[in-house]
Length: 414
Ligand code: ATP
Ligand code: MG
Image (cartoon, rainbow, N blue to C red):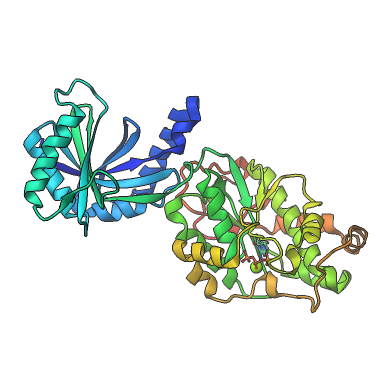
């Protein structure tokens, strides 16, 4: 068997999960298979603490490695050579591995055996490969502490894997190992990042977007779909619900005191999102709020909105600065999409001076100026959904099984 190119996927947190380890590893393998569906992949399988991806076309390795690095649960991806246990072959692979590493002045060899039936000890392998590399790169230095490049030689079962090029992945846990959540997704910078963050921790995400329709255009609905497609390599979003919210906002703006409008909109959004979460079997809501970022994100206002739901509301960005959130949005590629301005319900019927420290009694009184329970039912009845086929562990609720590529009514029977 000649030397082949493979991607070697490393993970670490999974190792900590004791008995659950194989469930986590199987989920990671399933997610990787789905993510690489359109790539020339021959096989994805587990080998001794790694996931191994073999290719039908070596030239696709760099692209595959890039995609793999975005899959939650992947700590590191190495572009490796898979060789037989043949000294000449794996030494030649080591020379090639170092050649594609990029610039370096110093290097070392690190050998590891997961099978002890190979006659050479790791020290022997280090020496053997090291000598060949010194000959091939006479002007480079061997450096045992902090070298620029490390050539790894892993003996696993009957094969030897050799690599130097290795990139960090996003880390986290495989999607599907942490249950299901419902993020409130606007077309702003924060909520797509918040969605991705809980997805990276293994949660299947089923976002809900409240659009200004029919009072505004449906542009924000399409921006949300673009955002989800941009997050596709993470495989964390199964489905998007869209709720046309404009008419209810208009009614609230006529009934409730101006300064409390935003809190009223938020409470209604939370209440609807919680109902969708229950239908979906999701166990928490997620928002992109960050403490004090805007008027509605003070502790008093957060408390005033949380009051209407009994589910936990996760706020992964609560302690993040805008700059950090924007940096993450840029690295995820969601930033550019969010820069396209779309009127959504956020821009509709906004008060001139929103309340920053809502008092519970006033909030309760404002909440009763309109029939919020009937509104929740109406909003649910008008909800629509669209499915994204990139989350292998997403299971839709029985009542909404059919797959839709375009927005379709979610609960027509209501
Ligand atoms: P974002 O950038 O996520 O829009 P923001 O800084 O604009 O956040 P707010 O508008 O106060 O902040 O929204 C706070 C959170 O409420 C958002 O992060 C999001 O989770 C949720 N949210 C706001 N508007 C909507 C919407 N139209 N549909 C769904 N969720 C929303
Ligand atoms: Mg917003």
